[in-house]
Image: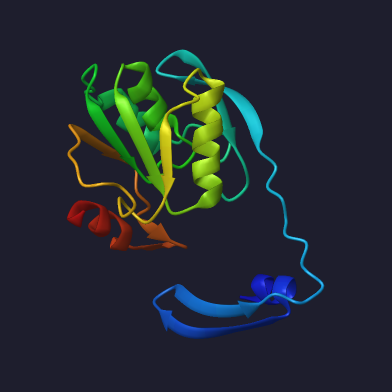
Amino acid sequence: VEDARSIFGHMGVIARKGGYHAAVAYRPESGIDLPIPRYQAEEILALGIPTHLVSCAGVFAEGRLDAGTAALVQTMQIARGGRVLDLGCGSGLAGLVALRAGADVVGTDVSARATASTRRTWAANGFPDARVHLCVGAAALDAGTFDTVITNPPFHRGRGTDAEVPELFVQE
């Protein structure tokens, strides 16, 4: 809230639910200088394959392969030519493993920085045309089916456990 107020000048919270806030902010006539994310590429191994991971501050597991995603990609069973949905794609590593297995992958994330990281990661590893959508869950996707859904959803808010996002993913 304070960050938004410092950027916009005029800002107020109109509703709160749990740790979420709905707010209204007014852009000053003079315009504002928004911070520009700095995307950085790191060389990591994903399933033993050298991989370009592109991410920035604010993206989960910035610059690294976290333990949850590492466990996910080691156990994924992806069919060549299958349709895969990567819910909460983050920096794109799980979806990249599915792309490398020959799947048609669609990524979604609620974070603009995450979807930009995914696009950059996929392009840096030879998949510039893969589809990524900025949306909550699968809300922006046309009706259709997927053979496989992969996700490493957030289960924490701060230090506490929160199942709201995983429950949304299951419902969708």
